[in-house]
Length: 454
Image 1 (cartoon, rainbow, N blue to C red):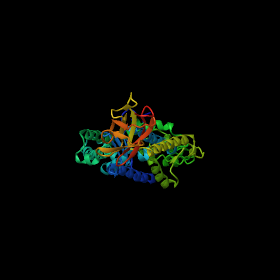
Image 2 (tube, rainbow, N blue to C red):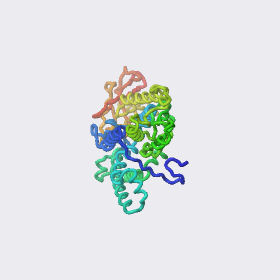
Image 3 (cartoon, rainbow, N blue to C red):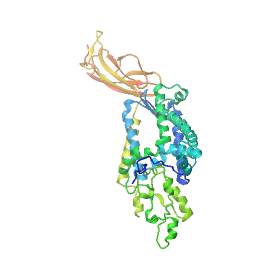
Image 4 (cartoon, helix red, strand yellow):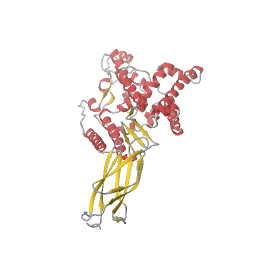
């Protein structure tokens, strides 16, 4: 028995997937082009002068829909990543491998770009198999070089678009980006070209981790592409049915259409397999055949193990409650923290080893350290105005304060009070820090040592 993707002697078994039409393929087309439009267009969109989505590695900033996150906002990044993970878990528990079949970049690029180009230049399945048998011939080289050239152009374009989520695309496309940016673009382009030209379904079969852990995320009520064994078996070709009219056969005519259209080269009739990406090409192929032969629904459908056994499918069950609850909690925590977040963060701490000092002029001095961080994405230095509140007659002594994006600094701050005979020993005050886009306050206490200052 050969391993999926290999012949009996262990060599690569090339998959020549036949083209197919149907309602799920139309859905593929719509979702695929929408996702590619998002990929190509998002890096060019700005909100309030900032990119709608970009991870600026050099500047250590993450821009998300007008908000800017820095390393000081690590909790937000963790919550975003955990929400995405549990969102995937939640929808997988309900709808199986919809991500693989409709949203994974591997599937989208291959189905909406690569296979149509391949069919246009090299023909459909039978023509490509025949061309493969003429390997190294003039015709093979001519057609192969043609598709490789297009694959390379697509790989470069997609890599530049991908890097637009890390570097300003205006710089990338005009030659103004850094050497490192173009080095990464070259790496991604080479990886994509290798995938388009050769690796393809092997990524889904051997490398993709999602196929391996999805078994722990799904159960008997999860939606998957399934073969209707009860009405399909025992299968028999039209010739076998004519030769054995007395035998009760199932609805499957063993045309193998579901096999030849599969992009990973599996036979869905063998039952659930990790290599199935849930793309429903086999569903559309069987639908076309069944309408012509027996005018009945497809023998391959989106279904669940419970439905196949005649049990009602349940959307609400412990698994979905757990994943849905965690997703809701993480999302709520993110938005609650986001609502209280300030682009300017400040902390005020008393200088270690000191409470107060009486200056030569009789004024009482308290010395603090003010830690200020600019978490905004504002370009250029941002002036920060600091005002003292709550101590009448006091003076604030500190250097001027300007911070660039993601910059953090600690400066000494001196608060002085004039002599007073009725001053409290400890008095509270606030420092108000204001910029063009934010206003925050930080509290402190002023010590005078005694209730009377001489």
